[in-house]
Amino acid sequence: MRRGSALPRITPESPRLVNEIRLAVEQVSYAYSANPAQAPLFTLEATSFQARPGEIVAVLGPNASGKSTLLQLIAGILHPMSGRILLSGFVVHSLSPRTRAQRIAMVQQESRLLFPARVWEFVLQGRHAHGSSLRFESRDDVLVARNALAQVGGALLSDRWMDRISGGEKQRVILARALAQQPLLLLLDEPTLHLDIAAQVGLLDALRRLAGENRYTVIVVTHELNLAAEYADQVVLMQSGRCLRVGPPAAIYQRELLEQVFQTPLGVEMRANGRPRVTVLPRR
Amino acid sequence: MRPLTLRKLVLQCFVLLVILFIVVIGALKFGAVPVSLYALGRDLLRVVIGQSSQISSDYGLIVENIRFPRIILGIIVGASLSVAGTSFQALLRNPLADPYVLGVSSGAALGAILALIAEPHLTLPPAVAALLTPSCAFLGAAATITAVYFLGRREGQIDSTTLLLGGVITASFLSAIIMFLMSTVTSGNTRGMAFWLMGNLSTSFQKSIYWLLAAGFFLASGAIYTTANDLNLLLSGEREAMHLGVDVRRVRLVVYIAASLLTGLAVSVSGAVGYVGLIVPHVMRLIFGSDHRTLLPTAALGGAIAVVVADTLARIVVAPNELAVGAVTAVVGAPLFIYLLRRRLA
Image (cartoon, rainbow over all chains, first blue to last red; front, top):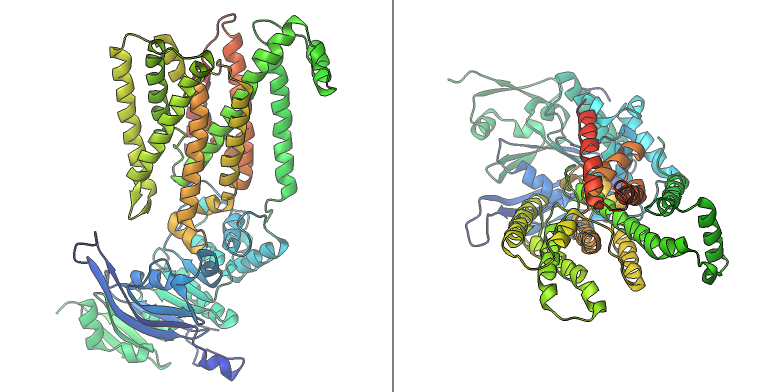
């Protein structure tokens, strides 16, 4: 689907799917502390939201607002101090690492390799959780990996070395590895960080399309307010470990609220397609 | 996409097995007393058809009782060190890691040196005396592994960086004690100590020890091999490996214990043979790629080849005297490592 095209973006196959809650974050909280005797260094207060298949949820907020913590909790890497996270009815952090990786894929900011690897080897790593731990890749695995690479427009990269491709290409290959996991939930931690504007738009277009085609639920942590406004179905707005608001971009992007959260003068206007646009204003 | 298949793996291992076989024949043939290939072949045939009692020639004794056990020891030591080195490089995510980086060899050396100092003061039956040094070395290695494990823990689980720092500090502390002992204690077998520190394969053991070493090698390498796919993913970082379904905590524990055990077994019978566990994994990675399903078995075979070749050189270069095999691996290994490093930078 083209960028900026009119809603609705979800085309459910059956009415049941419309109501299906894939991800439910229920009153989840967390605290980091240097040692158990001391007061926590950082606290994530009770946070709740829900997401459906095919939906893109953007998690926004200034630095140290708890976005990445929230993402690690959803990924099941961190265990919540209270509350729970349900993925299609299963409590995420009680799943085994293998089962979790079959259902949740994470795209990290960057991927550093110790020894050189080809792109196809890297993408095939996404198949790790699908099968016993000591095994050789099957024809199916190769097919899935090849499709995943094609879905991000990276078919031609297959035989290149991971350390010889550009930042934008690398980001697509990392996304392809996540797709090869065939997950229900796709998590992205600042995926546009090192990308130029064309690559940013390309990536989010791909996410939009994939969420629609493959029915992924996508959770993306980002600092790009305008890209989030353009692509997200829901926005979770965070500040200092608190979840302030959850809702569609048009409801969340209010000038006073954003100015208070980001501590900088901003202008917010509503565009014809019903999506807000943020501009940075000089400090008064 | 050309993913690894069982066929490809078997083929690669077969090629290396053939090379190892040739190297072993060479190691049996060359030495202070030359042996003809014909005699070797004839004796081998006699062993195969069960008539080993007919091997009565002079060199039959040399080949069967001196060179062969030494080659077997070289194979086990080389394979153990290479597998341990490969595992530590992946576990610690550090290309400079080798089997000794966590201090296992220093612990073993301290145990061995204490045994060599104590030995003249004890009256032991010969069978026990022969095993005193390797047993103390193994105890030293085991104590170090345990100590470094507890030093390397953070929030109840092994942390790679803490483990590396803990290991390096332990190693240098133990080395300091060794230097102190060697410079102050005058009794005991000083030449034996120096030889032990350099690494050598000249000690021969009872048959059961070889079986014990082989069993330990297959058990520990087998345990590491079950995590081969997990180690591949660990190369991109522990967090990423977790997201891809690796039980990182379990893998770290299995690999740490098994690789330390391999190192401990190798050093307790041969001392600290250097560079094999560092360089063989890198050479095999250049040839066969960094997939641990291939890398672990090829490194094992490559390590065996390297140590048998080095030990043969150690026996023949200054024959009828001999060098410590560790001296040969260091002399060949250091320039080779510099070459590989430059190549990597270029």
